[in-house]
Length: 166
Image 1: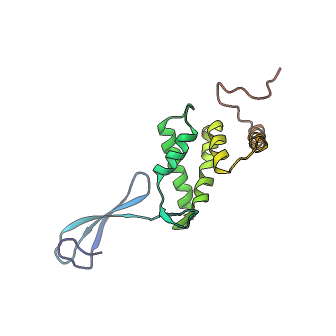
Image 2: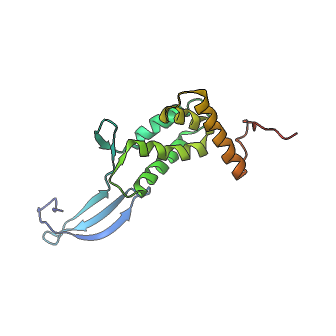
Image 3: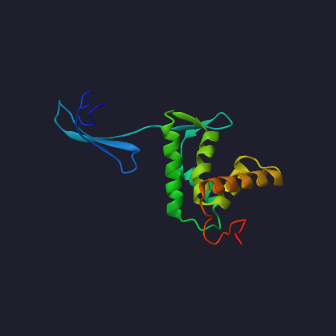
């Protein structure tokens, strides 16, 4: 770290603060040579390795684009989508790797999307997991129903259960 004023290679950290979303650290520094203060921001880099072999920085915006398409016409707010994208990034960062496969990003989307909206989950999963037949959809729906029955969680209002008690 060079002082931006005198180019001295040493500095002393006076204060450190984490950003609200926890993705960066702001440090207030002082140069021992010229005694001037300056601020630095530290972030971790996270790269996504695509199928083509290319690597690019992780982007919450790209996660949002894909999820927004799956949620089109569904009762999902932009705030809910932003929280989902943040959860996906946190899940990926928790793996502790500086580079992740694009497939892992997609897998990290599935669970929070399933919790948010089952229809949007099926849409995303059908494209992401390459559903090729009605049987693929039936298997995914059967799994969703089995998980719902096992947890006792009722379907979202306005979406009746496939088996109604009589």
